[in-house]
Image 1: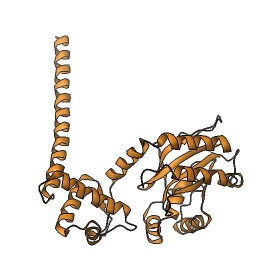
Image 2: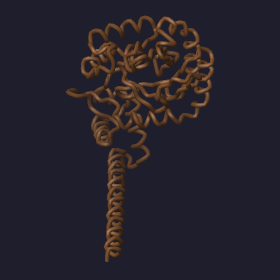
Image 3: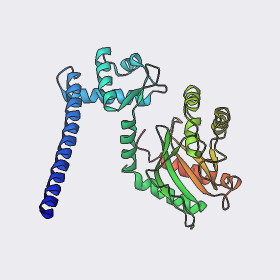
Image 4: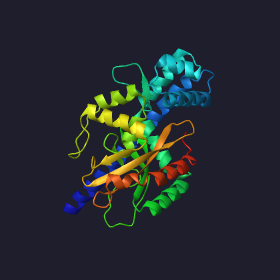
Length: 296
């Protein structure tokens, strides 16, 4: 009897698991169908391909705009009617690819778009070339180096090459660290325009990870101004106790900061004064990586 009951329980569990999988698959299919239908509705000429291209052009306009654009700005940039752009934006917002800034009518890239972009960068065809540049830099300075990009309110590690030292930190490719508590992150913040930078600092909870984390908005803003002038940033045990870091920007030909290279080590082996001596090699590596950039 117990064997029969046990078999029945297993069968029931299997049935429920199967039904759950069907429901989840159905929900995903429904969401996908809903998105396709909405895009076809805004296609104008009935072509879903045309609608997809319009949606992509809107995403590109939002991502390239210096400030978060409003509906009128986007219409002007993509040269489409207001009603069409609004319907596409509504669909993209529902899908998580764009979002409205709190308390405003401005649009920014959504979390889903950032995640997709991050995954694309992690699998970039040029990642091997960039990894080789990082390896050479580590060989030159003898410390761990990484390549990062901004991702929403954090820094995303695209690549990392460890130095041959026994003491290491577990922050590999795909890891995230706070913008305001890392050398790379402070670089990205410093190169924002003043309005966006101040808004970020004033509205973001500045969690104190260590005793040295810059958790006072006025102090952090002053630090960001200094970083912009110097052209490099440091992390003096602000995220991990006992670890210091120095970062330089990776810039396109027009000066846009699209990534950063950082070197870090235990402060018993590398203090900030010693780290500054690595700047020439790091800037040379940043220029080399800029030549491989495929996400401008």
